[in-house]
Length: 137
Image 1 (cartoon, rainbow, N blue to C red):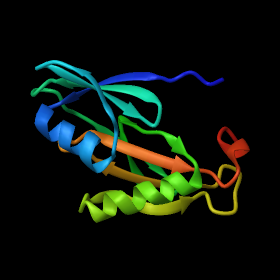
Image 2: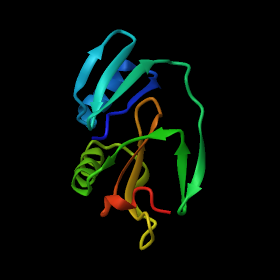
Image 3: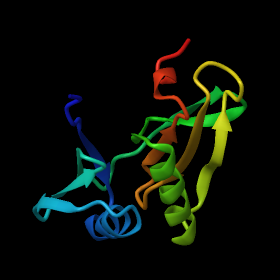
Image 4: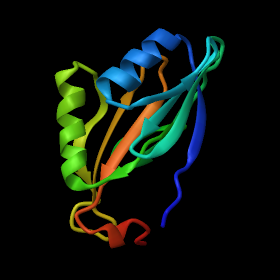
């Protein structure tokens, strides 16, 4: 059984993080304080830590799109990916890279989308028609 990962990341505003991760993405909330909030992101523990001065990033080209670095997310089932894509779009969140298929017709073909949380953290959610292609070369 694959074990959940844990990721702590900076946010500028905990109320905005709570509204985005809890409200827009539908992540159940766990423990919290006035400095951090735990969320359940598809079975993984992510923790938004208040860090108003955090920032800085770059990007790399991948299959014709600029991919922000750093970023994080989850590999979902295609059905869950489609539902999340619709939920994010309905909430009016701007996509950095709109939902699309990357590496079409090649090993590792995947549906992917990028968007940012209110603090500017980049998130990528992806799905494979064939999960065996996750680490395809």
